[in-house]
Image (cartoon, rainbow, N blue to C red; front, side, top):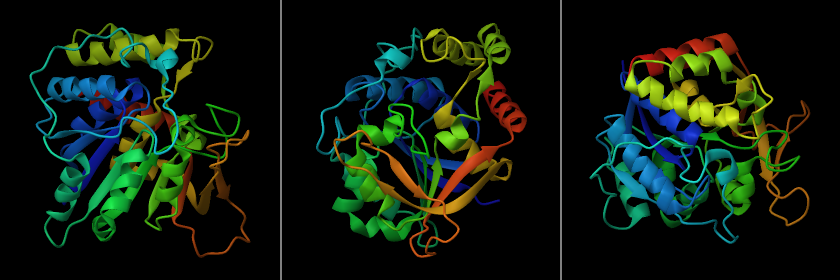
Length: 311
């Protein structure tokens, strides 16, 4: 069985941490070439430190690339109120001596893509603001021919940062527009599906009470989620970024539709809105986005818990 070549772009972030754990547990089907970081849930320094620590904790011997420290044109605003001061709640991971890759970040990513065997392509898995991906496509347009698809967490037909905008897209709408306008095949794991995904309180408590260090660590992070204002009255914690990884390994549990997507880059009330044309009468041209909108929740939970249990 051929493995899917992937490059993960993230801003860890509790749900990013779970996504990385799910990817680490899926190395039988996923060939993880590297991780790049982008300012999003926390500052670039904090999310990069988290990525380094997480990769060591998960035994991922792959390069970590420090990416953009802020949006293309806007002021950076993080989500510390959801993810905590460090980005990983109250969890303190073991220290690591691992360092980020030297050299130009985007040159490093470009080389990993272009140096694949001639008959192989890379799937990009961005689960934070799309700043790095937009810059990569603009600075090195030749990579487009070597990209299989982009499986991203972001957007949707409604919002969480605002009534109409999801946080990752809202954080850098100009970058998101570049990516959606690229014409590349895109799978959008947006709020339409991530709000139907997650673990319940008893499942998180079971992880937290585990004698297995890895399971207990991720249970601690998710417990922080449940104790935050965003989830304190909820029975299901949404693990947004893990959805992108589970889609790669188990696409059969998802449903979706092909749409075209535009991004609102104004400073008005709809800043960052992903305008999804779901009309049956919409032109076929430009429908390069698969909008995921449903999932088998029980299967998702079983698959994710099984992956975490195998670490």
